[in-house]
Length: 485
Ligand code: 6PG
Image (cartoon, rainbow, N blue to C red; front, side, top):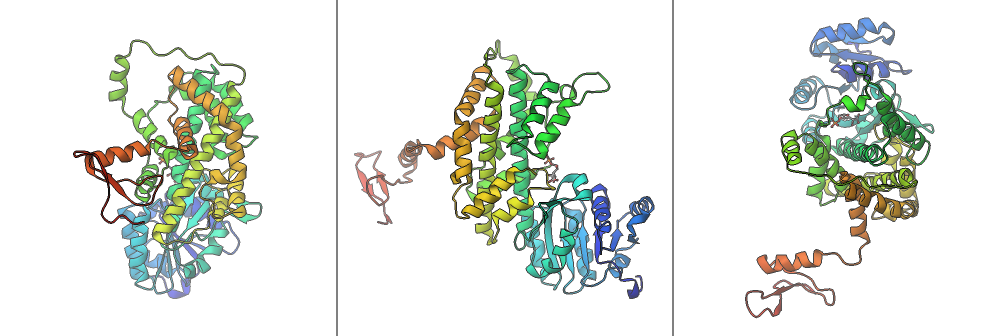
């Protein structure tokens, strides 16, 4: 263990793969930070310090020396693969840290694990913070969006350090104390779910412009670049234009045409849907994005089903408004997907007793993260106007935006259906909107069915109480036991 006089770093990073190294470099580039670095295999530590002498890192080759190099309150950010590796490092640091010190998990951890870890570590007097860090490798280096949870006490020390490295939009760092224990990792999970939905919607817009509009990838790149100057401005739209403009060096074909159409997933979108289901929150946009990736990854079904089909529908002939209709449908569906994502944040905050400021979340998502966009300003404004709205679709700006795009949205979903083009994101968003907008839903029939086969009872529209019909008897209606009115 280095002598205590060596305790000079105000922040440390454990785990120096690309994300960890970039975060350490970002920290070191900011005034006032002295950064301790440690990696289980010392080669990475030596490589980082050799490649970046300007960073003035304080390297250690044992976890004990790393801890000794940290000034109190010791603060260390763990950037190792989420899972057992994280637990191992937490255990090591907890054993060496003292009350008041701070352990930060910067990985994409399951927030349930973070809640458990925070309780266990806090019992020792050490602070534990689960922090979502969004923006990928470039974001880690240049300025991510950071979503820390944990205690208010920990944030007093950690906040200024994170603010020194976060992306900045309109002079505001893209970091906020999201809430206690697992709140940060929960919100990062929702961010990733929304990211999945956003990417799926963009992919559906591309598919329509390609297959129905007949545009080339390069032409569609120009269309997305143009859309990126309006209300659809976002990092994802921007990179989509770049991906579509790319030409494969090996074949000279458009890059998108040589990529196997089977999408992968590291799992955070799945977590979002699983937790939304538990919370009773419809996140159809995110779910359809997860399922679309799953469908694409089942060639053993796609091929044989395709082999049973003798003829596919004719591609509909569309008019000059088609391109703008796609843009309108994309925007309306995006509004629905974000509204559903924020509904999940509201429900999670209620279930886990977090006081999450939805406007603050929209604010820190304006920069640094994968879903960064001016669009988040609209959400920030919506919650500033009325933090109690029961859906973003109620906010006047979003209500008007959906109304403005509704006819086009319906044309696009019907054109896609008639042409045999899958648009699960667009279509589910439209059905979600229509479900909210319908004065009567067929749920009344579902209640009747449930009561018929399971005596699960129903309510009436014209009187209070809970009822059951004697379906297997004389079909008279009785008021069910425990009916409250
Ligand atoms: C981010 C990203 C990141 C995500 C990867 C993989 O916020 O920087 O969301 O955390 O995990 O991009 O995502 P997939 O689940 O699509 O593999």
